[in-house]
Image (cartoon, rainbow, N blue to C red):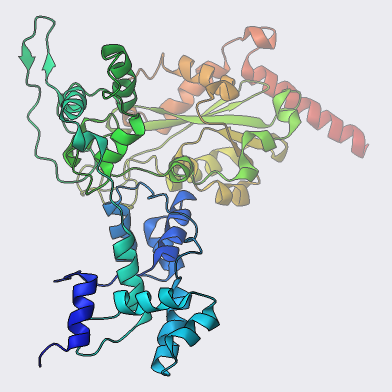
Length: 466
């Protein structure tokens, strides 16, 4: 069937659209909500569910944007028709309501409604049908104003940035060093425990600031470090190749939102278990029963757990043996920690050791932010021990434990396999430390200081009952 005159005129007015592609699955407002959820640290899959689209769609949006939010305005300016208004227009057009009446009902100019119907009506059918979803799709597609990236327009600047990112490593006399041979980049993060490509690898911030020193009078040789990051991560910029992200220190293929980066390392640490919530009596060391703990790490993912009482410096060592199948069965993602230092193994080792003590010596435990104590809630239920976590990168908040770990390195040096020692041998080392006099205890041993405390508690109990 031929093309009618009205349809032909509309096509000439709107321009030729041979194949604009598949209509989008969500509108601008939905994408704004999606990226707001991403900024709060929500995963792309969960953010997609929140706005009502499928999880693969959310993952595709996140990967296409390189993890960088497009900075969409929360709402479209009122001078433009919204999707709700287009739905009203489609409904009234189906009821044969005139253009001027529709404009009066919406409070718009008749010419606005007339242009909307002509521009955004479907031209894929014989009749010029107006549908709200298709009209919104056409309007958003036409409203895009892609800006040419500065690195794409300035060849000299692009070459400077690329040379500082991925330039060859050279000796002081200029000889090029090839470095290790690495497999081609596959769009993923840096390889785990494998060689990485050797490159100049300046950070974008170093490049942006060095431009001012190298070209002090050339304003065309200026770019912000954020523009370099976006050129690397966002598809479609066309300025820098995506595989150059492998030259960054992190080597990650997608940018991680700040909120997600803050939440990921210590997801098991909630506000009610941070060290600021710990009782004041633990800080002044006046009352025994407050412990500090950590792991000392050896080769082959071996480890020994350490518990140190803050007042008496009494030390207990946790035996963390290998689990059955270690070194034989392949590692399984999110599977059991066969090396013996997983959350379940550490929780059981602490519970077994700490329950051998009287209840008045089981008050609090301060740990670092390692995920080996992710089951701290269950540990509190099993033992009654209140668990708190130190602030990130603050080892001085567990100074007693750090000092004890340094003493233990005399028996368990770094770079050695710690899984070869059994529980009896660990008890012997702990006994050696607990029998060593300490200046801070008035040259008493930790064992003597702890024994004096237990005797004083026992005498106080007898006096009370007498």
